[in-house]
Amino acid sequence: MAAAATLSISFTYSVSADVVKDTQNVLSEWISLEKQISEEKFAWVEQKEVIENSIEFMETEIASLKDIIKTAEETASAGEKKRAELDEKKENLDEATKVMTAAVETYESQIKEQALTWPDAFRKSIATFLKRIPSEEQKETTPITIRLQNVVAIMSQFEKFQSVVTKDTGIQDVGGESREVTTLYFGFAYAYFVDGTGEYAGYGHPSTGEGWDWKPEPAIAEKVSQLVAIYDRSVDASFLGMPAKIVTP
Image (cartoon, one colour):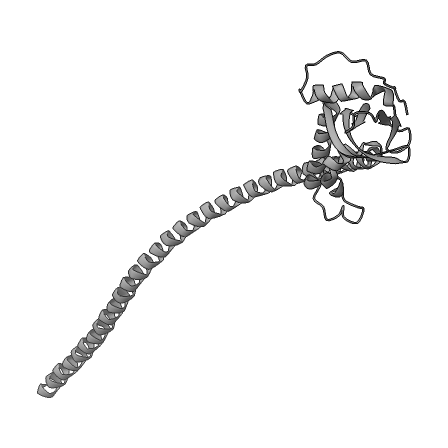
């Protein structure tokens, strides 16, 4: 009986020891698992904060980029609009330049043609401007603004000469004889001349061809001398009957 009791106690103790050991192992594994879970949970929390911060940063960046894109699109749109306006202005300017160029070329042609009929006194006064009229080869390199200014200068001088009496002293060739004479031009219509002796005189008018026709007329020498004196204001103005001729092309 005693031996049986001893065996029973020994068996019981052995079972209890195994249970305790298993329990300890379980507890150890559970603790290890809990620690791992805790660590992973902590790491996940930290990672979650990093992700949330990253998301917030990205959302801010996206919003900023959207603003930049919107501004760029608006700027591009404004730039395109401005470019379209400039293109339209350039087209209008090019068209106006074409019209101006055509007009200037017409005036230049008329000036060169009419200059053949102008008296030398006027041609001398605009000689510089006449030389500035470009040849066919020079037209490509001469700015249209320069050409226009030149035409305007000639036309201004033309209007001035046409509206006043102009006095000129120079050599006059009449009837194969050259004399130094004083000539009074009444615009481009008529002129009277007289030499220094007050005896040789005559008149002139535009030719139906080129230049002017000059005719000696000694009978009007005294009157022409008086006319010059009136122009110079050395005598009082008075009425003088002078010969004249209407010339039609």
